[in-house]
Image (tube, rainbow, N blue to C red):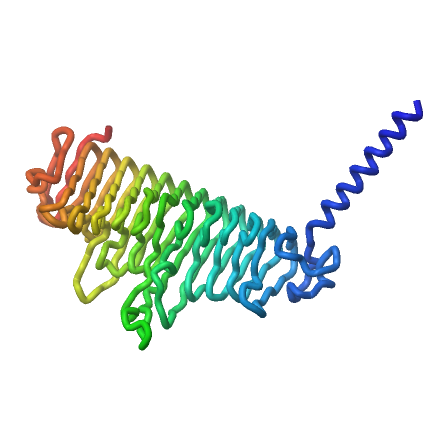
Length: 408
């Protein structure tokens, strides 16, 4: 009878030892305001290594870059009630998986870059709290070869702002899909990405940099899926879904509100499939696009297929509001653009093929379209295909045309 008791005691001693060992592996901030490098403010005592999980439940941790790439993580970073203040280039997922979990409290960052996944799996989960990043060069999901980055946002506020730079490099435009197929699922909360719409000023070594503007680009087979909340892209050159890399990038709106505001409008407020493949699907919610005044007078709200790429816009429900902006389909040689509408409502200035020699197609199968001016003749244009008898009414007082079909 003594042997079972002995084994039972050994089991609990072993369990306690393992629990203590697990607790030692996680560093807990002792609260208060101080430097990340202050070993006395961590429990157990000592500055956490990049592969040590850390937990901040109160106070403020100031982590300031003293040498290149000091700010790197390869383990879980959990914040619930405290503040992690980062100054410098931050890289998550360096030589090991890194996960950022924000339940309450905040992450504040300013520096050259912010990377969610450097060369190892990166993940971010927001169930509340606030995230702010002020970057000079770029904010992007995946950076180098490794695993794709996943970002699940359920609540809270997420903000990224870009500052002016003195030089330009194309890769800095890769918000998502720089290296891997990234995924961003937004179920609630608020998102604001401010590109600033400021030009990169040229210099002697890079004369071509002058008057280049920052776009927000989703590349490869990366996906943004919006199920709720509000998402706002401010002042980019454009929001590009699928550009210059193999893959099939996707933007899907299943609810909530998406705004792409004050774009330059030269190449579409939203450009889908630019020398690549891209798809935008609207099933529910509201999508709004606006264009800032520009010298060229361009007013393209949606560019679907450009520079030899394939673009697809599908509207099955919800509202797409372009106000007086146009939908331009298939711009450039060998470009293919297709718009299919089965329900919902679309307001635009006009719908037109960019070039009669390219492949442009609009399939109208249901819903309501409101266009500026008298555009009843669009029913006779070759690119416009209606599946059923369309009701086409022109209102001279409002100077708009309403095209409708019962939703499928």
